[in-house]
Length: 202
Image (cartoon, rainbow, N blue to C red; front, side):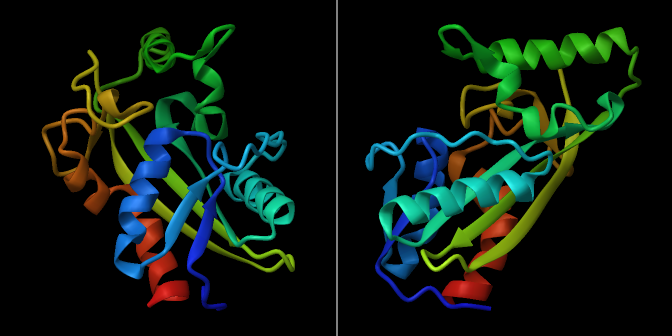
C-alpha cells in the first residue's frame, strides 16, 4: 500500500457537493484539496461498466494532466428491484439538455419501481469506489457500501444526488433529511474514506 506524502491533492470531480464532502474528510491531515473545475480539467468519458473502472479513468486522467496525485470517486445507487440500476449510470439518469436534474432522476427511479410493481421495502445501496492515482501510473482502490431502501416521496433538501429518496438502514430519515456531518460520518463514501485513510494517510 503506497502512502500519500504530499500536501496537495487533486480531487477529480466537477461536483461541488462531492468536493466539499471530500475536503471535509481530509481536513485532519492538512491536505489542500483542489477540484477538477479549478484546474480547468475536462470530464473524461466514463466508458467502463463498473465503479472501479470509471473511477480509475477519472483518477489517472487527472493525475496525468496535472502531475499531481489525484483522487477520483465513482459512486451511485443500485436498486435491487431494478436489477442494480441505475448503478454506474446514476448521474446519467439525471442528464437533461440543460444540465443534470436529480429530481427528474429520482422520479425516473420511482416510476420504474412502480412499473415493476416492486414490493416495499425497495432495498437499495449506495456504492462508492475511491481510486487514488499517482502520476507514475500507480493507484490504490477503496470501496464502501451503505445499505438501505428507496422511499417516496422525496424528503429533505440536504445532501445531493438521490439523497432525498434513500433511507439508510437503522434510520427513519433519508440522507436528504440528515445533517451533513452525520451523513459524512456513516455514508458509503465515509466507509471508503476510512479505508483510504487507514491505507494511505494514517
